[in-house]
Image 1 (cartoon, rainbow, N blue to C red):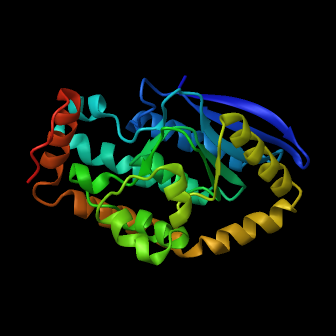
Image 2: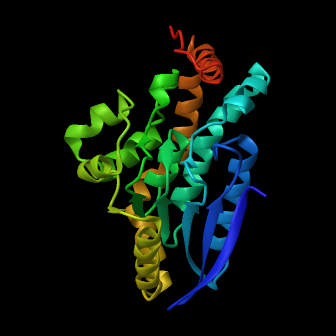
Length: 260
């Protein structure tokens, strides 16, 4: 089971806390990304559910991006679909028009940062974890959908270091640049912040919330298909997949990658 779904009661009705528990690093595969997308669609269509908190009980990782073992075992002709799955999942997160809160409980690299930034509210435990869009550092162009979302929350003077350098941030640093909304000294405090916000949001008429959220994200929603095509084109450029495979191999072998 990749996701533990915990139903809770809020002032406006019911909601869910979805605990990520995919593997030893909570990393993403095409299969578990599709599973999360299905869960989000189900909750979106369930009138009794008022929102979602995404979290992880893993001691170290919230979500550590794409799974290296999975990518290295995927036939090369299928890698584009496997890697592109994160863009599809991002689209489903943006289309989820009910309250969506993410608790960054540990490391949130690459895909973990993508899940975080797609949420309405982003809270982080001020521990040893870090967050960053590390795609460029493994040879992957950062998809336009991620960049446009980053621009909606991160202060403009930090766009270059977030997107072009793949800078990794501690909780305090992530809050400073706008990538994270609030930080908490303990995971218990983190949960209190999330529950308080979700309970407050659940009191808002859901039809108004959903319509307004869809308008807020309208620019992204209108371009979801375009984003997927642009990402597929970017990933097909010479050297991109070779660099990704070299980066994943180096990660497994605990050495510096030789990227070209």
